[in-house]
Amino acid sequence: MAASGTGKAAASTQAAALPSAIAGWLEERPALSGDFSRDRDAFSAYWARGRALLRGFGGRPKPDSPDAAAFDALRLAACESRHDFGRAHAQTLYDRLAGASGFIRAERLATEAACLVPHLVPSAAELAEEKGRLLADKLGYEMDQGMLLSAVLDHPEAGLKLCHAMLLPHPGTAGHLDAFKKSGRAELAGATVERRGRVAHVTLANPRFLNAEDDRTMDATEMAVDLALLDPATDICVLRGGPVEHPKYAGKRVFSSGINLTNLYRGEVSFLFYVVRDFGFVNKMFRGVARPDRGADEISGGTKEKLWIAAVEHFAIGGGCQLLLVMDHILAARDAYATLPARKEGIIPGAANLRLPRFLGDRIARQAIMNELRIAFDSDVGRLLCDDLVEPGAMDAAIEAICGRLTNSGVVSAAGNRRALRVASEPLDLFRRYYAAYVREQAWCHFSPALVANLERFWDASRRRA
Image (cartoon, rainbow, N blue to C red; front, side):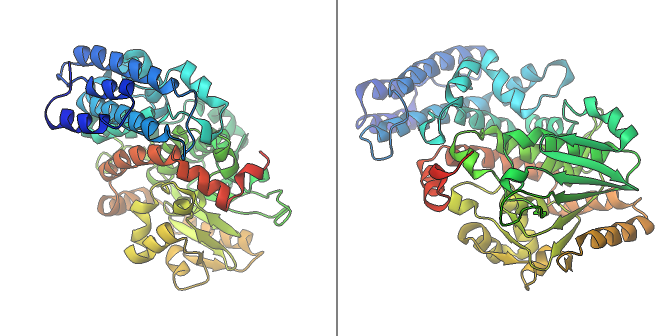
């Protein structure tokens, strides 16, 4: 079954300049019938042939290689066909993968779909094949995960169900909850959470890498946020960076240096990191932890949420700055600053494109995202991003003071006020639609040669030690 109409004409034009095997494959793209089983069989066979052609390159061609254009054309056509298939069958895909519970997390959806529809997303063997490669050498199988997740999120019902699933407690949280309720402390590999009075303190803890985030810290941070939100003995949460090892800041607290660029360059940050991070602990700080028996949207009121206070020392870079955009109150050391260098790196800075204009206005937000504007908190622009400036060395007292003020005045209306603010600024459905576009675009950014080139040019990534 061949592609038809303008799609076939476009494929023919493109194919004329490509090797015959790839040109023939482009011409063979099936047409969507609307029947899930029929489309699954036709497209699975088509993608299998495309995978074989991709492997035929013997690795990812260098950007200046004569094979680069053919490789990119093959990968683009494969991604577009998967995205189109996913959009046509999003509800069926989600329902079958979620099963009786009706819920499935993004990382499971993006891997278990390989069993339901062969070659729609990478198999376990293909992911293992990619795992040991530098980012520059990856064939980009994980891009297919982005196409599927984008398609599911683009579907209103399936997309909201996926958002709800990601707001449920992390599967590992239950194993820590009872012990935390008794002891008031949990140390996880990447974050800690500690109860002090009526306040839950979550500390980012990746000291070797300036509290950067990567696959190794993601689950721990989400579980720490879950524990803080589910703890019945606390009313308020504080997010802070722990002491680090870097010689310049040794023993001092820094908030966060964002994504671990060294591990990104080495191919040790998965594409799913972006999705699971933003849909997991970041969105939980913004919206709370959901229940399976009630909707996670603002009208249903089915989330357990608390006020969040951020304490920023030294800097909040990249993903660290993104975290500030979901906080209710921000304390910033007078000498601290924030930046969003994602454009310089070659990626999209999470939901900053959605949220930062609410704080700084569109023009300054564009300067921060597109042109690396450094925002000193002790400046006119910086004061739009924080609530209180704190003298260096006085953060502990400032945290105690704001927590005391908030708890003394009562927090009974906190959840209601947070939901009411989100109705006007970022309801769950707006978040869903933003991320339907984001995950597709981020998949292209993550595997772009430009990202690798930027990491080598601006980060000297090839010389850094993991």
